[in-house]
Length: 226
Length: 226
DNA sequence: GAGCATTTGTTCCTTATTTCACAAATGCTT
DNA sequence: AAGCATTTGTGAAATAAGGAACAAATGCTC
Ligand SMILES: NC(=O)c1ccc[n+]([C@@H]2O[C@H](COP(=O)([O-])OP(=O)(O)OC[C@H]3O[C@@H](n4cnc5c(N)ncnc54)[C@H](O)[C@@H]3O)[C@@H](O)[C@H]2O)c1
Ligand SMILES: NC(=O)c1ccc[n+]([C@@H]2O[C@H](COP(=O)([O-])OP(=O)(O)OC[C@H]3O[C@@H](n4cnc5c(N)ncnc54)[C@H](O)[C@@H]3O)[C@@H](O)[C@H]2O)c1
View 1 (cartoon, rainbow over the protein chains, first blue to last red):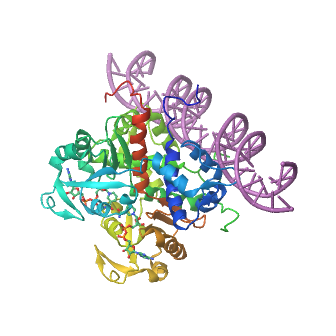
View 2 (view 1 turned 45 degrees about the horizontal axis):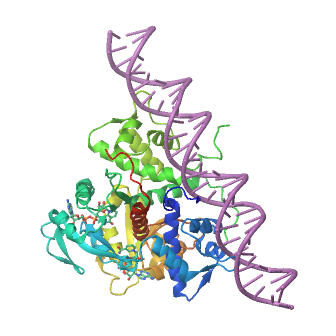
């Protein structure tokens, strides 16, 4: 008797989710600037994201705005935070305390979103036992055991490509349900484990192509103001 | 008198480009394994990307395969490399020699794709002049001047969020045409400058949502084999 | 060298996402 | 409190992306 598809809400499309995190960032900035109301038109002006898109994205999460007025910044921010489940602490573990892994461990941005890095693992004997920021690097061999206590569901994978699949399997074994993967490898995992890949090289390749194709294609558009 | 839209080729869709870099990575692995021919069906089996999708993606770049046989790995790899313009050196500069920036400078993956990090900048006096891997950290104030000589078109932006817009403007001023941005900020730049944003937090937020929504939504699908 | 088993390139259909456009809602002004 | 200027939420239209299906091409077998 409702318009929903299944039992709960219908799933939020990935493109929407990706934008939503952008909105969240933007709203946090607005709060800092003491702005307490914002319209979709203003969002478009400041973020470049189409106003209708913004409004429709929000309908996937619920209703928030007031016609003629706009959106209450604090309220909307809180609501998005809640939907993304970033309103309570979530434990995260990291494997691979190398260059990239070390940078991530020290990154304060995680805390801001209530993501709590609770353990770091590596298999390099000369690293195991050493401190890294406020954590001690642990042996990857103890991963399952350690996470039995911690119960983290999210992991960051920052090991070299050749080791990635094996470590990913270990992570799943240890009860991890979501992996942020930095290794340039396509992980083969059970369907009930979520994976997001981050690839700087991919992004650079896209830029490289765009630069190259522009000189061939672009007949140079009309305007260039901002 | 061809079926093309404009003068050159029609633009490759971004989703295709993103997958293409995955193919490239995959093909390089195959070469390592001495495999010299691959079919789209096999690509699907190993990467999870639909075979028809793979074939269609390639048609955006040209023709490569032989019916009944498949694709020559080395040839396809070379072709993709060429289309992405990663067959010749491209200069890249980086601004922000902090945690993340330092990890990136030391990353050998760039070289593999003929991306040559030629200069690193920072505005922190205690860092300027210091060596970072094989480079010396230079003063951001000299960016325009230095790049007049170098002529890099691609930049990596790894400064704190509050500084990002200002530095991005400087980069454009210095002749940069493509920016890989790590700061959690929406950069406002001329339309003829390409930007790709990398946001770990965004990715983690998506994972967080997926984890959360699953417990509400998922009625648990049928199969789980692999 | 004809038949057969493959596998491509591409057309056509389906699904997803974006954008448009407008009625309904809100609050401000007089 | 009626009119007006905004701005939302949302159906309907437009674009874009994904996937199935198949004719045409290739090489292998006998
Ligand atoms: N550094 C970068 O800027 C960068 C950029 C893009 C992608 N990446 C990718 O991120 C990953 C890590 O990069 P990095 O530069 O930090 O590499 P790194 O070599 O500095 O660090 C890798 C770490 O993983 C550890 N390790 C190796 N095998 C392991 C195992 N089986 N179990 C646990 N730990 C193990 C190593 O001991 C090392 O500490 C790589 O896959 C790389 O391709 C890195
Ligand atoms: N460290 C991470 O794991 C991580 C993860 C995600 C995003 N980020 C983002 O990447 C960026 C860099 O992160 P970080 O951890 O390396 O920070 P950091 O503080 O370690 O490094 C920032 C560097 O930028 C330099 N800098 C500041 N203002 C500058 C300016 N105007 N011109 C030139 N250089 C300037 C600083 O001196 C410092 O060396 C930030 O925007 C951060 O939000 C970092």
